[in-house]
Every structure is written in structure tokens, then in C-alpha cells.
Length: 129
Image (tube, rainbow, N blue to C red; front, side):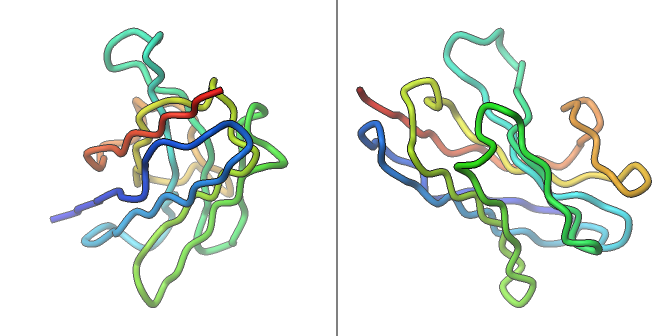
């Protein structure tokens, strides 16, 4: 049974960095994507914004514009662990971050949360100004 478990969230001042981890197991390892979504306090319940993805077979990554250039998604295959490093954190990065796994669409990844059915429980990131 697929399982994802996030860790690494916390409270940090603006300008700081965090690395989130997601221990993953039991998911299909072909034609799939691993990624991160987040839900800010201002968003409607259940509504999540995509943050970034990695397609493990190709190593390609994608990032939403708001984190591009200051975020890195990586995958340690030996540890079956997905990471999200965010630098230069901003108050608007305050959200609950979720990792997810789901099918790839060709050589790319879906950006809609509706296409993903495997989720972790989330980890809270709070950035103070």
C-alpha cells in the first residue's frame, strides 16, 4: 500500500531555509511523478497549490513561478526519500506542505491536485517577517 510521510517543517524567519523530507514507499515506479503541493491559510479548504515535481525516470523537475530559482526538488532513490529545499523563505511561503505521487503524463507531470491520489499527512511551514 502506497505511503508518504512528510517531515522537516517548522517556524523560520524570512530569508531562512528549510528542507522538507518525504519518505515514500509502495508506489509504482514507472511513468510516475513525485511532487509537492501546499495549502496556505487563505486558501479554500482542500485547495492546494502545486509547488514542484520531479519525474524520477528522467530527472526532470518543474517549479511554480513563485518558488522557481530558490527551490530544489531531489530524490534519494536509496532512501526512497523525496526532498524539497526552499531558500530565501518569504512570509507568503507559509503553508502546510504535502508530498504526493501520481502518474506522469507523457514526459511531464500533472499540476492539478485532482490527478494525484497518494498523499502524505502534510508538514507545516511558518515564515515570520
